[in-house]
Length: 158
Length: 158
DNA sequence: ACGCCGAAGATACAATATATCATTGCCATT
DNA sequence: AATGGCAATGATATATTGTATCTTCGGCGT
Image 1 (cartoon, each protein chain N blue to C red):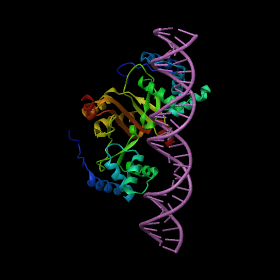
Image 2: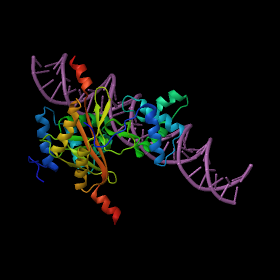
Image 3: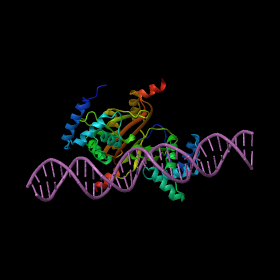
Image 4: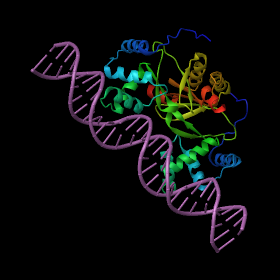
């Protein structure tokens, strides 16, 4: 059950602090705008689209935030490992342990939209090896499973 | 190298015939429009978007084909296992062995856009089990690897 | 003060996806 | 032949997601 190395799972302010530290170690500036967007992303209960975040931040700050600004910032976040893109949902999710680098496996519920993530380096390693065997380089694995989560299955059964 | 069960790899007319048989076994009608779109999808050298296909079919038939018609037909194709959606590319690819059901692993080149696929039931099975362990049902694994293909890597080195 | 440069704003547009309603053609029943 | 049901397709509109380009702002070093 335990992963090989400790994940420091953060939430709330602790997560924001850890993110800021990791971000600045990567040589990026932790600006107010970026902090706002990170907060909105952290607060989301499911993968959020750039437009969702633009709307959320516009609402919370009063100022109107354009989608393309959000995209720019999300790109920087993803590059710095503060966030992940969920390809099958065209949406983004915060990385709760920004200090360590992983290939993630996302489980995305088709019914409620919630996503959870699994780390299994043995599994993601196998996927990487399969791609390398085919001559691929600069790998970026995308491993997601769409399905119906436990909670939604229960709800249907009731 | 050999997979556990024989894949019948089709191409050209042989593929269209096999697809039609599988499609009709699934209780669907093989209409001229669907045949056109299947042909366009088969002819594509890389994953094709619905709009690509709409344009290709419009060109080859003279009649204008609307994107939503293409979407509808692609949905049916995917349901009948004649085609696959490449999530990380928002595009579709033909299934060259429509008679057998697999979870596929797609390798997608960020440089040239080509996609190839790998079958590894052990690997995809592990992904499924990981999702099931988390209580997910109705699984649809999305396993793709973005990267740079062998051909493009060579080209860069030259 | 001046110029440089990265961040952010503004605007426009491209690409992808869905909703809705109308039309057509086929088939079964009458 | 008329009727009605039904699946496939057409037509149109709109929603959603993603980029490109140019401008403006603000910090920072000279």
